[in-house]
Amino acid sequence: MATATHYLTPEEAHHDEPLESVVVRFAGDSGDGMQLTGGQFTLSTALAGNDLATFPDFPAEIRAPQGTTFGVSAFQINFGSAAIETAGDAPDVLIAMNPAALQTNVADLKLGGLIIADEGEFGARNLAKAGYDGNPLDDDTLAQWRVVRLNISQLTLDAVKPFGLGNKEALRCKNMWTLGLALWMFDRDRQPIVDWLKAKFAKAPELAEANIAALNAGHAYGETAEMDGHVHQHSIAPAAAEPGLYRTVTGAEAISLGLVAGAKLAGLPMFFGGYPITPASAILHHLSRLKEYNVTTFQAEDEIAAIGASIGASFAGSLGVTSSSGPGIALKTEAMGLAIMTELPLVIINSQRGGPSTGLPTKTEQSDLYQAVYGRNGDAPLPVIAARSPADAFDCAIEACRIAVQYMTPVMLLTDGYIANAAEPWKVPDMAGYAPFPVAFHDEPPGEGEAVNPYARDGKLARVWIRPGTEKLMHRIGGIEKNVGTGHIDYSPDNHQAMTDIRADKVLGVARSCPDQEVCLGEAGGKLAVVGWGSTFGPIHQAVRRARKRGLDVSHIHIRHIWPLPVNLDDLLKSYDRIIVPEMNKGQLKTLLRDQYLVDARPVTKTSGQPFKIAEIEAAIGEALR
Image 1 (cartoon, rainbow, N blue to C red):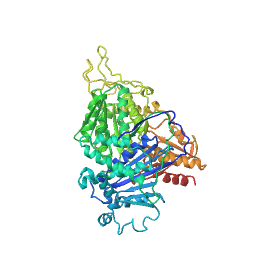
Image 2: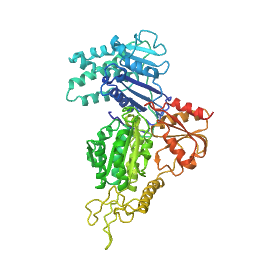
Image 3: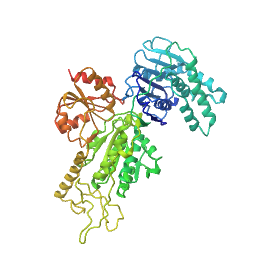
Image 4: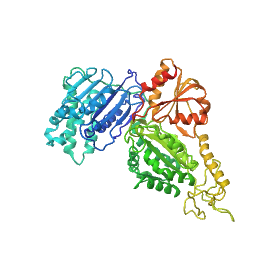
C-alpha cells in the first residue's frame, strides 16, 4: 500500500469543528483493483488529516471466476474528525462494481445508506452469477437504501478513448474513475494520486495518462452531474492530534520497522528467515527493502529451513527473526523447541488467520493463543506478547527484541490478518525516547583449570551468549539436555529437573521487567471488566466507552503480555464482580485466565473470519450486567 506522510503543525492539531466520521466500502471483482483504490483513498484521507482505520477483505483464491461471489474483494475505511479505533460496524457508503459485490456486501450497509452501483456490469450473465433472478437496480430489492446507478464502465471507456487502449486495458482504469468520484465526494486532493500514478507507470506513460484521465473524469462527473440529490460533496474536518510527523502504517510495516529499531537498540545485525504465507508474507517484503540497516533477509525453501536459518544466525551473533501464520508455525514447532533448549534469542511472529489447517487464508482470527503458549513438546515455555493495532505493532516488535536478547529466549509476537493488512495513522516516534538494551557478548576466557560453560547465568537466569570463533571460548550447545554446571550432555533425572525448572523460572521472571497491567478505560475494580487481547482492542474500547456514557459500571483491560501474564493481573481481575473476554476463537484467553487465577471469566467468542463489531460487544456488556 502507498504510504502518506504529513507533518501536523500545532495549529492544525487543534480545531473546533463538529466531530463526525464516515465509513466507505469499495467492493468489486478481484480484478477490479479495489485494494489499490482503497489504499489510494486512504492515502488522500491521511493527507487530509483525518483519523482513520481500514479493513481490507479479499478472497483466498488468486483469481476466482470473474463475476462470482467467491471472487469479491472489498476495502473498508472509517475516517473522520473524531478518534477512530475500528474500521466501522456498517458502511455509510457502498460502491459496488458488479452484482456479486452488491450481493455479498449490501446486508452490511446502514439503513438509508448510499449505494453507488456500476450499472454497466449488471447484465443478465453477471446477475445470474451473483444469484439474482432479476436486476435489483430495477425493482424494490434495495428500497431501504439510497441507490445511485452510474454506467462507470462506459464512462471510463469514454474518458480514456483518446489514448487508444484496447477495451480490456481501458476497463482496468475504471477503479481510478471510481476513486475520482470518491475524492470529489469527500473533498480530497487528487494531486498525490496523480503523482503516484506517474511514478507507478513511469515506463508506460500512456497508461499513467489514461488512468489520470479516468481519475479526473470521475472527479469532474461529481462536480457537474445531477445525481438525484443522493450524492453531494461532504467535507470532514481534520482530527485533533498531537503535533508531529505522521504516516499511515499497516501492521506488517510497523512490525518490520519495529524489528529494525529493536535490532538497532540491541546493537545487533538482524537476520530474517521466512517462507511466503498469507498474511505474513508482507513482513518479508518490507524487510527486504531495508538492507541498509544491516538487515539480511532469506526466503527459504520451506518453513523449517526458515526458522533453522534464523536459529543459526542467532547462534552466530545476529538477532534471528522468523515469521509465519498458524500452519507455518506448526511446522516450525520442533525448531522452536531447539531454540528454547539452546536458549538462543529468536523473535517469532505469528500473523494469525482462520484455521485449522489451511482454513481461511485471508481472513482474521485469534485462534493460535494455545499454540503460542503451550504448543511444543516437553515443558518448553517462551514469552508471548500480542499487538493490539497496526501502530502498536511497532512497540511490540521492539519489546519482543528486548525480551529475546535480555533473557536469551525465543519470543512469540502475535498479530493477525486484520492487524497485518489494516492501516492507521502513526505518529513517527522520536527514537531518543527508547532506552537501548545493548548486548554484551561473553568474551572472557575461563580461568586456569576451568572449562567454558555456555550455560553460566546472570541474575535473570539468562545464559551467556558466546559468538562462535571467540578465542578460547570454543563451546557446544544443542537439543540434547545439558548439565546445569558444565554445559556437557547430561541425561540424569536431577539435572533435567533442574534445567527444566531454570528454563521455566527464567521465562516467568520476564514479568518482573514488564509494566503492571493498566486499565485502558474505567476504574480498577467495579461490576464488570471486559478483558481483551490483540486486535479486539478497537471494538472493545468503543463499546466500553459507549456503555460508560450510558452510566454502566464497566472497564476495559487489554493484555499485551500474554505469557508470562503481568504481575498485578491476579489482584486486578479479582477486583471486579464479573469478567467477560471477547476474542476471535472459542475462548482461549478465557481458559488461560481461569487456569492461572481461578476467576470466573466468561467467553464472548467469534470465529467468522471477520472482526468484532462494536455493537456485538455492547450487547455482551448489557447481557453480562443483567
